[in-house]
Length: 114
Length: 115
Image 1 (spheres, rainbow over the protein chains, first blue to last red):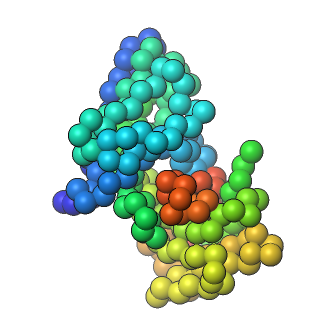
Image 2: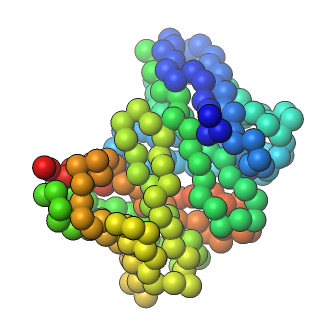
Image 3: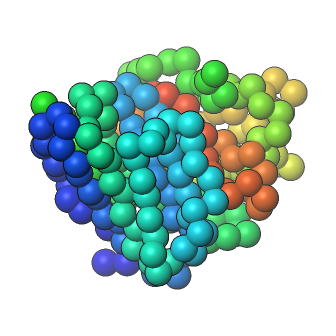
């Protein structure tokens, strides 16, 4: 399977706990994106990496959120001190720099904060 | 501010007929537009795209039309099939090559194709 892989698929956590999600992009893609989707809305951009450099962060990405892509391959998204409003589907996508190619999405991680 | 809008949350069509999904945008800097399809519990899957230098792009049963003056695009599916039932997202890119390639999505339209 050479698609974008995300783990875990589902995460239930209590308010105040920290959670971490992982994304493995398509291997030849140098760009990696994180999106968040809530019910009835389209995916909202959070941040993106080109290789290991984080080049843009949305204002949606509060200080409790941090994303890394240490070796330019997989990425992690950590949410500290989770709040109920963080409950959403977190989607990862990858793509190629400079190409008119679509972004390829993973199946997401569904986060529920109780 | 919602830069990409899909004003119809849902659409129901009979199998074999045409499905038309609409999308409006406000930012004239958008120069690349895409449609994604999403099934429950899966991520969005790319369907078809169009560059702002074109007004039509066709791929099998799917055709996307772009009207730049009206800042409007539409997706036509002909003939519609029950397997097309899904949520369809319109997305736009502000200068694909120089703005990181990020996409801005509409709210989605849920298409139901009835046998």
